[in-house]
Length: 126
Picture (cartoon, rainbow, N blue to C red):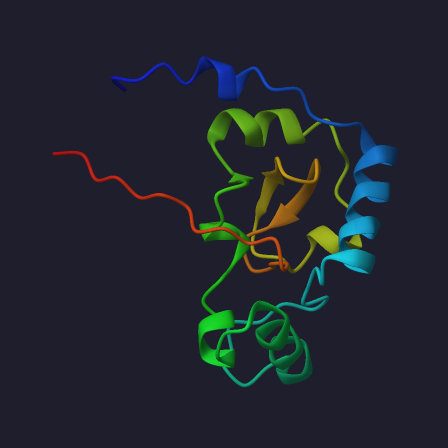
């Protein structure tokens, strides 16, 4: 690694109770979902249709916007280690892997999203 990522790795995370509160806030106010994830392009149609309307994009485009490719989602090995301090719960069981949302300070998942989604920059090594 040529860049210094220590500031990202040193970021604190919330505890279990605050994680749960923050997650519920995102579900209530930012269209976090879908509750039961799936890679099936026909699954969760009501959720994706609603989110597409909120984001002003086609449903197919909304379905491409996962937490996994969101700017705020950190699923680095260092963050994975930090998240081990927060016990798994039912919401973790089908989300496709954990990552930490730095926008809302909670553990989210690869296959979920919300209306705050922002494109993650991508840089390939030369």
